[in-house]
Amino acid sequence: MQALSIIVPPAVEPVSIGEVKTFLRLDDEAEMARLGALIRAAREACELFVGSALITRTVRLRQTLMAERFYLRSGPVQGITALSAFQGADETILNAADYALCETAGRWHINICDVAIGQLIQVDYVIGLGGDWNAVPEAIRQGLLRLIAHQYEHRSDPSVAALPHAVTALWQPYRALRI
Image 1 (cartoon, one colour):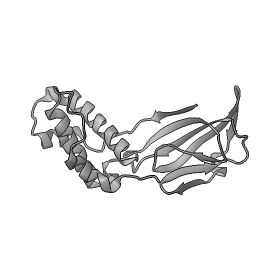
Image 2 (cartoon, one colour; image 1 turned 45 degrees about the vertical axis):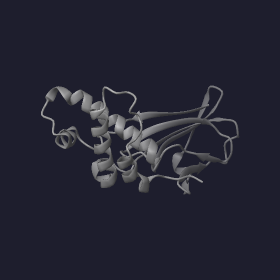
Image 3 (spheres, helix red, strand yellow; image 1 turned 60 degrees about the vertical axis):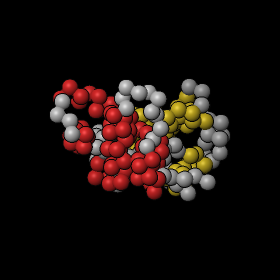
């Protein structure tokens, strides 16, 4: 069993609706809801591409412990807020401060040696580059604006789904590669 869910979503997006309106040269207030959806979709596509959460959020991972090294999904990890082990319906709350957060080759993990292999582990942790758009590199923000413009321009053509080359060129240096 492996499930990652968002407990506390990002408080802001890496680009604002005002920035997008200016970039697209739009004056129509009726487009606000559509632009908001395009911003969220572009952020999610970027996060999948680069392998990192852009804006801080709290997530929960529930996964069976397969080894002493328990790998966290997504990053960068800012900290662990809660950690529990389950044996059937019985929950044992573990002191998150007793478990060191480690990063090896871009993968985040905690060593859980005092819990039996096969138990269900639940960990709540904070991920993201930072709490607002200032933490996001400008090249990523520019790629987001270009992707949003691309999505807006091709909104009635579902066959145009690929990321534009100009966007991937801006994001490529920030892509987390795993070996």
